[in-house]
Length: 539
Image 1: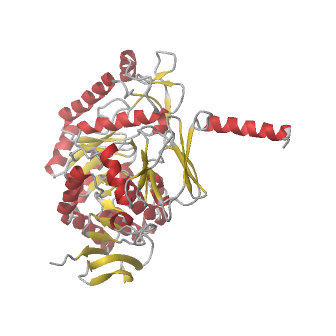
Image 2: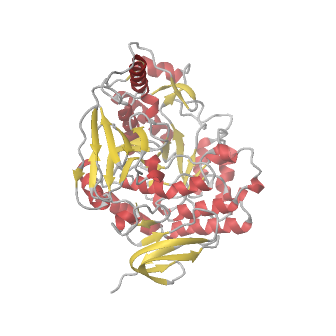
Image 3: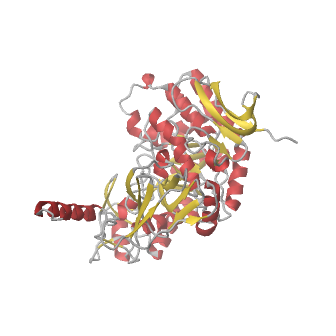
């Protein structure tokens, strides 16, 4: 067949554009087309795609080495038919006509048949590729609520308002736990001294917070403000990512502007940064750090030169994550691999909406299936501060805040940021306090699950399909298992009724009513109720 010149040119232009936009589109790439087994569905790759899992028959191409959707990536996928794929390097994937299509610059990726279920696939893969370390982040993360100053203070972190926030936690009888001071407490990026005009006595502030029962974490990032003494010192030592072919530090765009960046592939740079953070701990009594801004997209520019000449964007993300292992109080929002390690992960900031609330459960389920058992489901009500700007606080949907709190209550962790006492009426504030205390009450069980996970690698929050394979739970996205004992079925949309799908066995709900499964039931869920069902073990 004869092709027109115009058609050939179009094909060439399209190929050039694809190559420019995505390096995986190259002549040397390896392609794998994995045809589905009967009734097989796939999960994995990106925590941020949780709401799309299991994947439908058609889905656009995603590149693990270039985007992380504000969350963690793992070069791992697994199926309900007991198959999994793993690669040590980043790959791209898409769904096309029901086939899982993979592209790799490194290898031909072949699925492994581990068994017949989602759990079979997970259990074999984690033993081979991300075995549990045996270590936990600090137990306080699991047993008590957390508080973060981001939504209330944003870029105006200051001593008076921080102490006021903590005081209100106590005044309103909320349980005391981890307290995170967010971005902009420091003079500038790369400096680890408190802003003197906003913090007159930071050590005294932290001592007071400690006396109130809080553990204190500070927000940090790998970026360094240019034209600062720290920048000049770090550049002279070769501790910053360089512009290719020069000795000059590269200036990298990120959400807070343009900055230099620690080269975490350089062991001496890592040691220097670790030493700086430990000095902060010694000087002020800080317990740990929230490690932000490690997204793979910061490291994809081909003009960047790393100390480790073979390092990739995902390697740089992983190096940043490894720093947190030296600090039992840690938190990450972006990551690469590191499943089974003693790192706290948090879902990416979501907006204040019912749609965002519905993402929490499937995203948490995807985190568990990718090896991140120690995960926090964003901030209650959403972590995007723009959702709360310019809004009449009296017109905020209080039902949404309460339901968000309930979703968090029986997760591995729960984190407040927007102050419930500021935006809720007396009745709804009491409900949120009730569920913060439920988390505290269930804290010993949640911590027990975390300790088990440190040994077995199993998720704390488990997909219903993982726990009850081939019983009709593949597409279940609005309920989950907490360990093997509780089904949790929060309200994720406005209203006071919902349907719950119970598997085989006898289940006792939060009102002591018993049900015999398998069956679907419709239940009443007034605003002060979080439905959960405990498995009744016959003796």
